[in-house]
Image 1 (cartoon, helix red, strand yellow):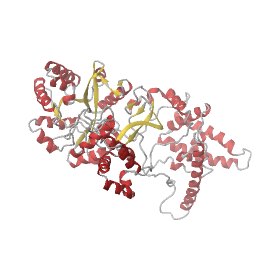
Image 2 (image 1 turned 45 degrees about the vertical axis):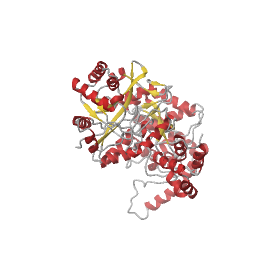
Image 3 (image 1 turned 90 degrees about the horizontal axis):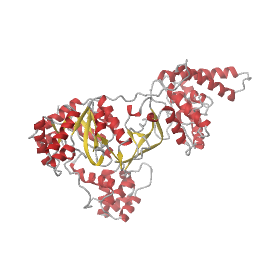
Length: 597
């Protein structure tokens, strides 16, 4: 194993600082031969799932951690950073609880804090790093208050027995070296282990200026503002193990402990498994039995509206619909999505019964006869030869996804109903992340560089207003822009830095329509975020996007009975059905857009 592992690192998801992007981070760690790396963003797990996936893809062990602001005696003016790393599932869950509580109960002027009492309730399975000179022990040492430093260190050592480390830095910041020598002396006196970190904020040393610009954009200041605090140095990059060994050659145990901590951290996350809340059913019936009952009763109502019961072919038509219904029911029950259909049925019926306009349904969900029978959709899939397999297919297991349109002015009432029904602690909306897009990043960079508004405005307007536009794309297709950059050195300075910052996460928001319903407390599955008023509760994990289907593209999977080697017969019938289904979906989507409320 390598001689060093990075245990303290902020990515772009820290929002206030950090220029590290997840995929380049993992790639660089793998390139340097390090087997593990920790991400310890500031009071959030925003990038955790992305980090986990990227790390496993690259063969790197992900270590999940967080930097928290710990209040001293309920006083936000006396708050110090503390870095916590999850050792196991218990520790991961405790960090999730602490992060969530910091937002829901601990915000002051929009900044989330935790209290020591909360840490005491959630200390199991967690390793703590002292945060170097900035931590409470470090500040006492720098203030030459040895007794206070001993008291604080002993508190943390008792709270995290054999799991608290005095953190050492050599990043060129004021107080680093003074703190290091004092901390080593304290560690020897108390028999407390030390660990070296580089408190990473960017991948390469030459990204320091771009990182400073990112900080200034957040703070609303300019780079040359004499009043702004300089908290970072160009040395806070992802140093190689060799560089760290050279830097801490006099304290080799601080390097060895970074590897030992990495060995102690082993969190296994279960991804991709759906957890559905229990839908209340009448006594004496199982969920599946109630689901079948509701589906058949709903189909009875639909058939009475679709066909004349006295017609000669009514029995034949009814059999056709019953066979399709049974096929869908078996598939849904087999895949374990009974509860999902019942929950969606419930809040749509409630909305329709409470004067809240609901769209007829669109997307692949319109291909489900069960959804039609349960009044989730209002489009008869058999009339248009719509395929259920496009919505749910046992050979490609994925969560079903109904696109439901509610009246914009009344949809919050539906969300409130769901929260009241399943519990306020089990329902929230979903987070989204705003990024520095092409036009905006040019203006922001120009401002922090102190360039004129006119220059920023001119440069920004030369970037085409187009969805998905990037700086590279604009430069490629706009000849006047290339000429302008060649002629104006200040514009080129803006452009060069903007290219480094483009796409960096800038802020968080709320998904317009996504709602999460958990079978227990949301914190059993995701950390939470909310604004400083305590409202706007959202999960910190954003909505994962399905891969493989581009915008405007219609892809129809083959039914289970169709085989690739057949050139005629069923294949020809399938292609004909597909063409009719495509036309019907276009019709259904158009109807959905017209009814979008």
